[in-house]
Image 1 (tube, rainbow, N blue to C red):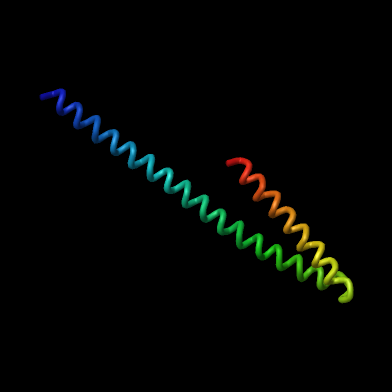
Image 2: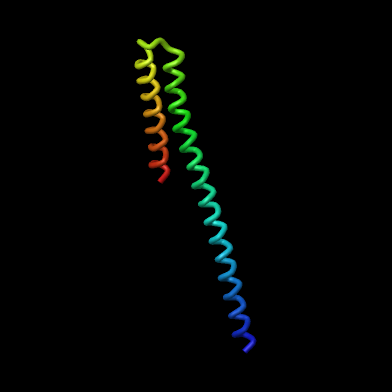
Amino acid sequence: MSEAADTRLETKLETKGEKISDMRENFKKGTFLIAMLFLLIATFQLYFSIGQIIDTWFEPQYAPIFSAVYNFLVLLVSLYIIRLYILKR
């Protein structure tokens, strides 16, 4: 009878430990998702701010050229990051 009680106690402790572990994993995932959301918002704001800086600092006739170069650089960096992500998997 004492072995059965020990087995039940061990099972309860294991499930409690698993629940705590799951809660920690969920917390880590939630924190990561919130950080990624902030990163996404900041990236969009930076992108549009740089576009406004180009319009402000450069002559109107040259602004489309600098905008195109800037957008091309953003494209290259994005493709490089995606490539790194794909190669990691």
